[in-house]
Length: 456
Image (cartoon, rainbow, N blue to C red):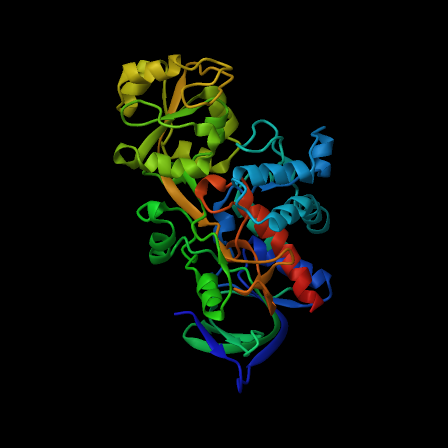
């Protein structure tokens, strides 16, 4: 059970200027930024090897006006990016956080590339829903595992300590809200560490069924596709401290996880002209609205499953993602030379599936309002999928310097948050999630938190 205890009369076993809880993208960026600012941070990580939600993602960071975009003649601006974020979030996201994320994302990506040797490139062969231009920056493998490994290597190259296999369960706070230190446990032994500042970069609460059922009831019985360590520690600590909690109903879902293989199928399979049908062979939504809101749509279908329908042209694009290649190797990809044969192989009505394919009028809105520009061609492909909860987007309210805010709106003296611990820029619902919002805020506000904490 996570606890807040008074710090009076506590004699800490050790003291550090800056302590960071969590070594995901947010925590690692915070550590790099803090050291650059002249402070030696220490990271506390519950896993033996840092991974977290970052490792389970595609590792893509959206950013505007980068040199990578300019090299591809892509015109973009922080203003346009902010407009896209705000539009997708239905105007519910905190304006200052949206502006800060959009304005600093480009510099953050270039900082990671130039100072820490992360070989980013812009993905240009397809675009994610909601983004006006190509602005997704990814690493060669297109995996979050590569992103977390490279960030960890950058931290280790600078001799920043990462204390792995240690669980933080207690914060020690003074009466004015100043966080004096923490208590951690490893192999049954307990240790207290005092700190001058604390960054919570630990987790969301997607892995806590009770909190999910309370705040996101429509996903209470969904497949959880996130890190098991996302137990809501930051939310529980914040609530006990009197912090403001914001948009706890927000989350990132995904409507395309291969089942029973439990492997993510990139939404590029849909955005390049594919679509989804249910067990009756019928489409049921505008797939172009986004993969996050598609999770609940898929779960509402018979059996809580659907089929991604696309072709070999699209499969060739999707194969740039390691997850798709793994799904194909695992036998999740079903192919056929005719739509009738495909319908038989996946067990849906052939006439219904054929009607959906033939009912797409290229370049014109369909009955769901979606416009598809390119027709599918034989041979056809299908993957059986379900909807899943990936990570939560609500959390501790922060200001533009990543300082955690009290319920009265004033910041705590030395407490910062980023990543899953902090509120994101997706508003209050799944449909507000713009592709990449998770890593956008993790990296940008992680870097901001590290630098701001160092200034204390």
